[in-house]
Amino acid sequence: MGFSTFTLELSVTTRCNLGCSYCYVANRDVFMTPEIFDKKFPEVLDLMERAGAKYLNVSFFGGEPLLNWELITHVTKKLRTEYKDIVRGLVLISNLTLIDEEKVKFLKEWGVGVSWSFDGITSNESRPLLPVFENKNKDGELYENIMEMYADKIHLIRELTQGCKVMIWPGNVSQMVENYKFFIEMGMPNPDFSLVRDDVWTKEDLILFHSEIKKLADENIKNIKNGIWTIVGFFRLHILDAVVNHIHGKRSFACFAGHHGAVLTPNGDFYPCARFASKDFMKIDDEFSFEYWSDKLDPRKFDKCKECDLYQVCNTGCTYSQIRNDNKPLDSVCELFHMIEEQSQRIVRELKDNDLFARIVEQMFRSMG
Image (cartoon, rainbow, N blue to C red; front, side):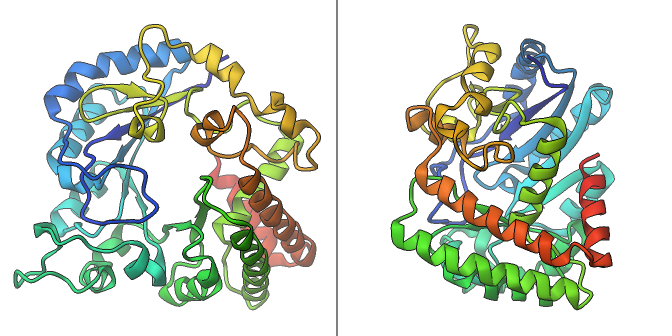
């Protein structure tokens, strides 16, 4: 057991300025302080040793992390100076509604990557603004909606990233294709569509998803044939997993939770990830064994998966949801993965002789390092 790089989620606050319907984090006024981080960081080093890791990746998580800017600057400077030999990467996971020129300058100067959480054309419905001070414009009035707020911020966001993570859930499946077209026109042709992998998908939702994912694949194929460098996150991930797993074998973990990572909560507790922390479930203490849970959560050993035709290429779904489901992948998520895999294979078949697609795939593998 062991993984070279440990993943640390820093839940710098549970407060957020949005009211996303699919979010699992309780919106509360709880903030991590620099003192708490400094006190608990030696324990991070201990967790790394227990997990068999030599290096560290850190993501600033929330709530909305930009609401605790003091903590972000403190941690970044500390890790980039005192622990530069072990810290491989720093990433801010944010809705970026609160970004400004000062923050952009700091993030770029200190090498903090950015993952923009943005749902595109459905954002006004899926990510409503809360009536809080932070959502006021320069005239002191509340923005009408999040898209209006982004209109004032987009020039700053473009300095930090050309991509975004889009959560796909039953409430926006019918608009996936329209949303993809929106991102193409916006100049973000590689949106990271990502499933909400909870037990929220009904039979009707799955039928609709099956229809819409075909249309999404059609649109992705058409765009590449027309010379646009584009690949939707759904298809990118499944193509990579298929090739890597066939070459190197099925990997031994679904995600970092319980295997080679943890979240540090605002009050200084550790859990396998933020999902576990949100339910105060499986707190990491001196008795927690990464070796035990790595074995217990090894997707190669799930009886349910061994007879599945996607066994070799699928790394299963959310670790938290599986533990809550008697340590078995959710049926609905399995169905969704089958649909995505089906369309990913079709994209490869139809574009296997396309030069642009070959370059896109080559770049995909280069980006993995």
